Image (cartoon, rainbow, N blue to C red; front, side, top):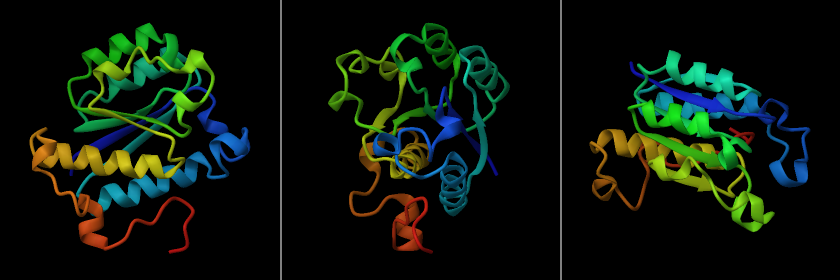
Length: 172
């Protein structure tokens, strides 16, 4: 079974308690569990790392170059993380950028990402559920050879198997 890298950047290790009015009450551990379950539904394993430093994130990308793809929440490094951008440019598999909040509805300095142009796509503003949306988009891209137009509109891969979209922290 191939693995997907889930890479979270600065300050995401304190999710659940850090500004819950913006980032919600779901912890990173709960997000990782939900992502792990969704990935298992579509035939992938998970390698999850969170780092507060850009250098450690680069190391994680280099160590996990053998993964099938990645979901990356760079946190504020999206704004000026040039070495992270370079490492993502050298990471060959497809990857999806995720942000819990809608960065374009916030302060203007958050409106530009130096890494977004390299991503398969960007999911922002859906809270912890955005990670599951990223899993579905990445899995569809991998199963269609990168041609998302060949995916289905009515059900992402995991929903087609489970018939529902349970979000992190939802009753199961």
